Length: 65
Image (cartoon, rainbow, N blue to C red; front, side):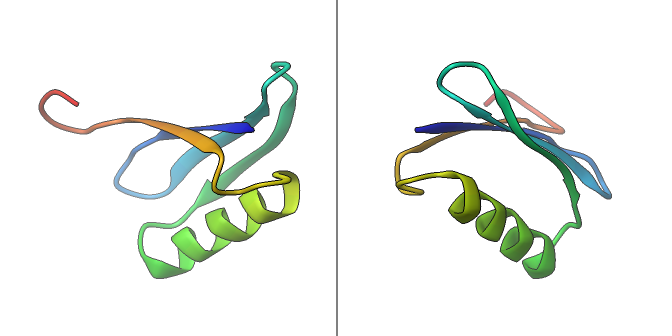
């Protein structure tokens, strides 16, 4: 399992991907849109044994989560 944290922004978004142990696996910036999402998905596929078992959290720009 991996944990994905996204600091949402207008451009770009800062992302941290961590293992269950707390080890940082990747730090990256992704663009807003399809290209950025594709990069994020590829990164998770590289580091997760089962990408479907990932937990995501992000900081919304407005309102409550």
